[in-house]
Amino acid sequence: MAARLVITISATDVGSRVTTRRRVPGGFRDAVGVLESWADGVLRVRKRDGTVVEIPEETLVAGRVVPVAPPRPGQK
Image (tube, rainbow, N blue to C red; front, side, top):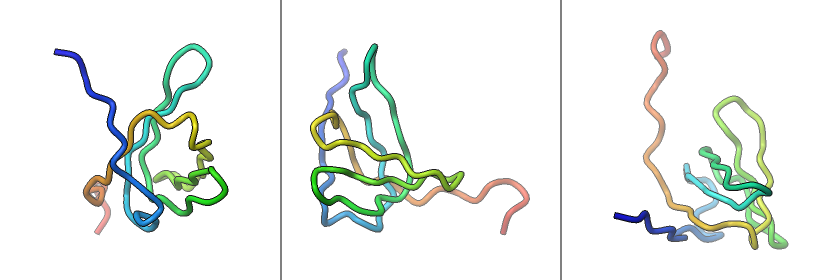
């Protein structure tokens, strides 16, 4: 069975935790984090480590809202 690549996120999902897949030279890259903004054709996703990934909208091949990440062991 082949995977379906579907984009179900939009600018209205800013503030939600999302998972994304985008085209890059040689393949694909994934980013999971909070969608901080979607403006001027660029999505900005803040990952758990605090880094921000900028994703040009035209490279986005899949995206969806996902549940909040569970706490890491040792965190409350």
